[in-house]
Length: 172
Image (cartoon, rainbow, N blue to C red; front, side, top):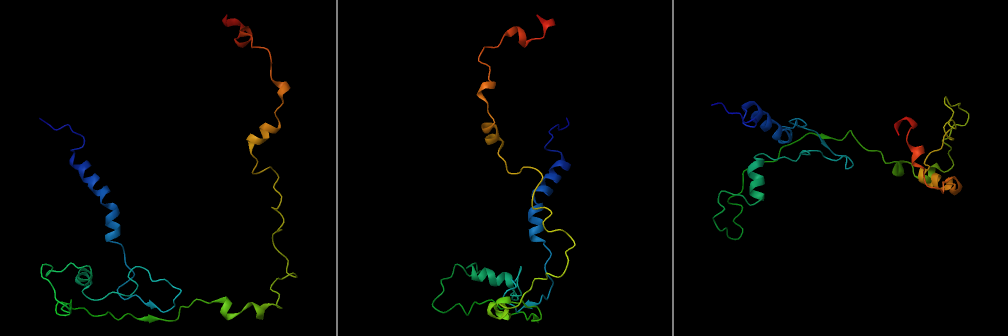
């Protein structure tokens, strides 16, 4: 007898597993920024991803720093951590000092620029800067307040509705 369960279809199960693991796949297999990224010496440029601070044997080193060690059942005495330290060396990354951030307050302070005018009054502008100052329609107007302002109590009928006038004449 054939299985009629829709969820047990092998193609559907495979697609569901593919969809559920897609987000983790990009996080794990994300492209890096190269094998030897330049270390930016400018303090204003933030180091992204590893930031040129990897060491060799990084998995064992991070496990050691988190306290996950193969000798976890042993009770270490005082200053015995150097005996079981992970063999690791620092990776030398090339330095890049040609990128720098200009700091306008340090380069040209306000007291030096006080008498200099940076506006160009003699140059014509291509577009009229006052073209869109006034909009041709009302904006940011609350329709609720407009209805309250324009309400006229005399326009309300004080007599009850006649049921004969509500229906068309041919239906009664």
